[in-house]
Length: 417
Image 1 (cartoon, helix red, strand yellow):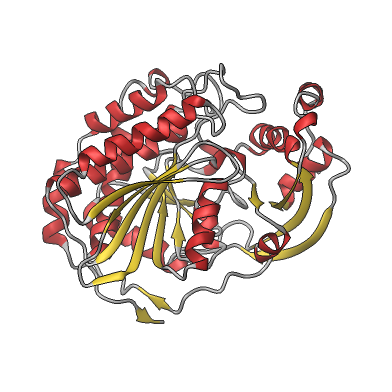
Image 2 (image 1 turned 60 degrees about the vertical axis):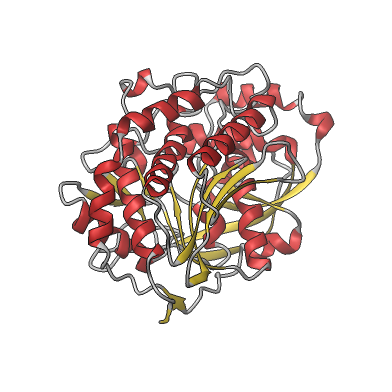
């Protein structure tokens, strides 16, 4: 069984009193390792339902590694417990997330069901080399660096603070400037009912295949763990200013070249990822209810810390095997000097999980192997100086994301598989 250090237990017990007055019950789905930690943080929180879920999504030609199933629990907890749970998961399991906050019991129960995946999938053919090869050299790490700096200059980007609201507004403003003059491009801020920070969505409307949608996202919020508030310093340069910056550079190059896709492409900066994937879950649930035909979702969460010998790691749990194979093939064709590795991160470790649980093909390329990830995240040390004041590693993810956006964005209708 996972055990918290006595010092962490004492800290969590002390800080739990501050939020007790605001306690309200919420339903969460949570992986088994994280559930063991929940039992220590909040012994009264008990699993109401549980199920073994298949997690492996290995690309073609990659041998099996690690677990292929994971026990996931449904638990009702006071929301005041969630910051402590997040801290425990970060300190003991070394990752973000680990649980998803659901709007109600019915929504939570969907997380225990195997997602009903669409049988209509992209062809995954790589046939737009002329366009991609023209655009790739235009991506500049200096632009990525500037965006990371601007976002990490905020006191924090926590989902309940004025700084988090302002950071969302800044991203929306930057994306609108990049899209200026394009009548087929719009930028909106997606309002969430339970907190003030809005998600940001830039949409490039497809030409003749607009009913099919492609999503590329990352989260805009930052945290230093339990107790993050208005005065807390949470620069979040890698987690996840780097992912937003990598995506912003892709937007810049697509707009500068007047790229017009056949499919609709949406770039998303999600609110409230650090507290149970709340922003992306709201959006993915809405899209599922509205029967939006999302044919692919790509998540960039931390792109600028090269903790491993390989350059890009594809996470193989709670992702789509076919799309993972496609990403590996894109790297071979367009980024042949880069080394691709494979790893896993557990249940609900980032926003790709929100799309996966709704049956949409999702992938999560990451900056390092899971056990070699950035030790500075969720601390005041997650800054650009800690990354050497450069964004060369993050540029690799912009390159992969651009190839993904153009190859799938320029594709015809999905085919039955």
